[in-house]
Image (cartoon, rainbow, N blue to C red; front, side, top):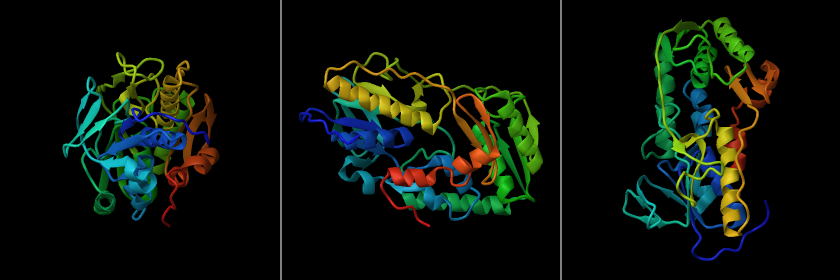
Length: 322
């Protein structure tokens, strides 16, 4: 951006959640010189797009955790949010600290199990060790069962089978077509073919699941509030829950905070044509860009080789470990 905005002392943005949307919002605010505090239970950003590979490849996990404090210094708090008082406009942390805000960005993501999520206060080294322990568990397991054949499930099955070709891997799924419903039929069919080619056993069963999210308007404001926004997985937007979309949300929200401070019209978020890349191990993949099928060569070059970890280190202004 380059520009900096002159604001009075009453302006302070609190960001709850330091995932892809949270750090994107923090970086945008930092570049504009707008005071903010980023709160997360971890002391490092978790590049969970690469969580599945970190679960099967020893040493990879250290590349998936990037220190918040190195990038954001005093604008970061490692803490658990206990409550939010929207009337008094402050966030209460587990240690009793109260953070006043003029604007609030909720970027808490979605709840879920390890290896994709950490839902408690944890330090970087402890989180890395958790992944290394999982690698050892998978190494010694004679067989691995992956439950759920959505995007994460098919990628996990492919990662395990790529790293350990001789291991018996079973993928249990609740629907006939694998991967996410938004994907082209040709992409979903190719996912199945890749898994079968790798030797993954696919078992289909009947099961239903549901989730919830915060209702937002077209400006990504939480319904009923002008100064509270929701981005990423915790926002109810009709599109797949993806890191890429969370970053797009962050750009719109920070723009709208700036526009609200400068009396300009708010920007509308409009989901675009779907871009979705599935990494099927480090040397394979399939996906679609703007509604068009893309195959192994493009997906492997763009995503599968390093799962965008180098991009996150660059965005955080830090050097990635070897």
